[in-house]
Length: 572
Image 1 (cartoon, rainbow, N blue to C red):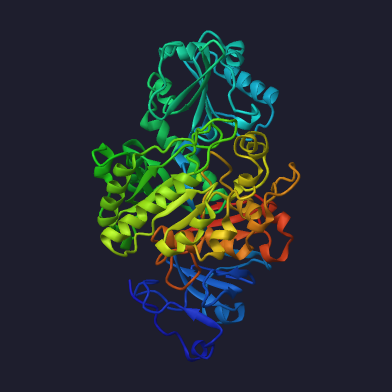
Image 2 (image 1 turned 45 degrees about the vertical axis):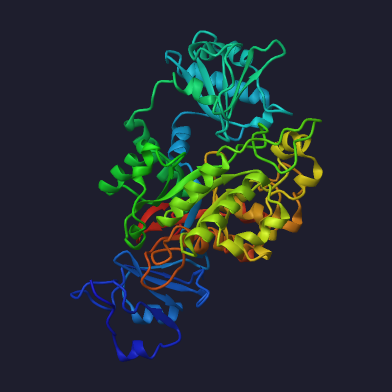
């Protein structure tokens, strides 16, 4: 492969109208330098490149962007198939900086309870799953919302017993921090009134002290230990389903937010068989440096390669969630007690681990919901900076439901990326029916402070936490801009002072997310020489009302120049 050669005097006369690759591997020596494999013309090209923010045509060759400029200039300079987008929007393909794609794929293929908002509807869906699989040893589902059972998200085992009392039933909550089991599942796991709560876990109990059926955090592992294990064949099928779904939504890059040996083996197998249609940064679960998965942490030198799967990142869970009152808060939960949630990792262990990982060049990816957990994460990274000096590891903290205002400027000062799941930033039942009674209006009014951290100089990146919520970037972008329900079902807004611009959120899902993933040389903007990871939308997002952003459709998704999704309508 060698750089693009000059093509003709006529082409050179188009200076200023056309940007082409210079010194980039976009074609081989024997190829026609004026040939393109595909030209998008008459498009609303939003490049996300500050040096050339807008264009209306892009030429592609050998999986890479050959040129960016005007339709007149590019069609004059290059031959090849032309797809007239008729004013539709062309963007860099989306990067999701926090998702659980294999779990999402399993949910797509199994008993999915995602998006159900009523108790009767939820129970009816579980009953349908039971009827569809009457002979299974277990009935397992996922995706139910804790907000269906206000105020504490604590459903009773008897509701599941009424559906199927003969076999164990386990329904995993959407947030991944709670599970709901029937009596048979609790008995299979040996959970009784005498079973103590495990460390960092809660067995919810009824008035008589008997397990009620809801398990929080580490208590879920008591039942999971007796659930039939997944096979690698099931994980592979789930990963393939996840990739298809991601490509349908214009997503071609993930930070897989919690990866162990089994998940890593799946991604590596798909890369080996050339089946990957997304770039994967695997955040390896690390609970201590003796953890067996720590050996999977790769040399950060792999960041400079074109490998599709990288393991130069570590995931640390600092607290739980507000719904189960396991998120760590600076001030207690309401209700007259002194409980402030739980910090999962003793400070001495956390700071030693963070300093060690940082010194090794490993990117640190932290789960933090409560403001105490966010502060602890920032404190640990500050200690690593003091011990190791500045570096380019690009650590990030995700979720950030509550952040103390004193900590807003620390993201910029420490170079920590603020990884928001913006689709949560509207007054849904989680917030109004579950969180509000637990933390009060003042704390609700400062939830998901996207604009505050941006105003303080912080870098915003976007992720979904799928399957906790929808993978659709456009719905998350709309919510961040409006702070309202993108489906228009729930009235009201959540603190519009924290609304951010469309451009901020487009960057959060393209340029800044790619930078977080150390992929800015390959993707995240539309520039000559970069991989042709692109998405075509049916409308220009800048030309429509903000409350229509989530309704915009993906028409085509390209990954490394190959079409990996196209809509059935026959549109470009």
